[in-house]
Length: 495
Ligand SMILES: [Fe+2]
Ligand SMILES: [Fe+2]
Image (cartoon, rainbow, N blue to C red; front, side, top):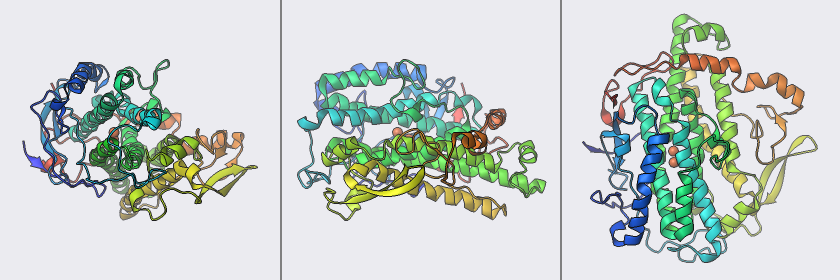
């Protein structure tokens, strides 16, 4: 096993000092768990339930496989992970906090400038607990959503990346459960248990947020999810990393380090899909990206379908930001529990007493932009920051298409397209941003969102490639392997 730095995306978030993780404990941690026996006992009581959940709801069919995984051994960005073969149920899920910043103060809201809280501020207890529970709930949800994908992995490299994302989402659950159990007493323990009981997509006890009850039925969905929906995770974690509640801030800062890999998996997964499509089109002499019948015969995903797939994932993920105008979000900010994206770098009063923010909404059938008190537009702003953050990868995907000489560009649909929550809920808005009627929507939606034929075609492509070095027709091999291993490395030894 070697210790190595992951240099894979420009999105890695840096933390400052090296804190060794204690792996001698039953629960690996860098929070000196051994010194708090009561907490240790409570977490050790939760641990077997967690493992039972993992075995029941984690990757189906691969629980005995040896997977080449990274495990966090510290929180130093220069060497925080080691790699080696692990059976997933034996993965060492640990509790890791980024180092404490001495003298840290609350960055925003009415307590701005006061020392950051090390204990839960009593007056905000239930709001804070809710923020943590909602974040926590998304972590096991995505594992559940992705649990069938191993069987159709387009390569062992991709299968390994899927399982890496899965075990790290599991660790993110640990990170949040630690906060609940340590800081919220009996309520926290009950919430920790409930997190193992809800199930993605289940009727009577679903996960809390809509997008986390959607299916992730195929690998294209997985890559779109890790690019677009894990990026919502990045934005939420970044906003929670600004929390005045210091343990939450430190948890989220380290989670962001791991999140960078998930975004990398999504971006390169879609990028490699595009690469395979463009190469196959060029080889066959097809220049028209809309000649989909001919393109699909080549066993690759046509670009218009990728656009529809992206449209779906973008719109569903935008709903995760909640109502654009929200008094709950205003209160979380004013209380100092959740900041804005890059709060510390923003140059304003960090209290938003008199500030306004432009929010798009539909008034009398037309989309207008109105100035709204900035405090009430916190969600709207985070959504705008998210949309801007999505664009980088889309540009890089377009470069691949451009380089191949194909006349096609992937774009983001209008903010109001296909929304169920917030200002645009109940409206019909085209990707170009026209407010249209229900009839027009019904007539056009198969052009804008994956249609039944698309989904059947994608399903037909999902043939497993489980030999080292083998890659499915629809996806190009990566340029580099994981941890400097070759691309034909046996990343998963299937039992
Ligand atoms: Fe996560
Ligand atoms: Fe993630």
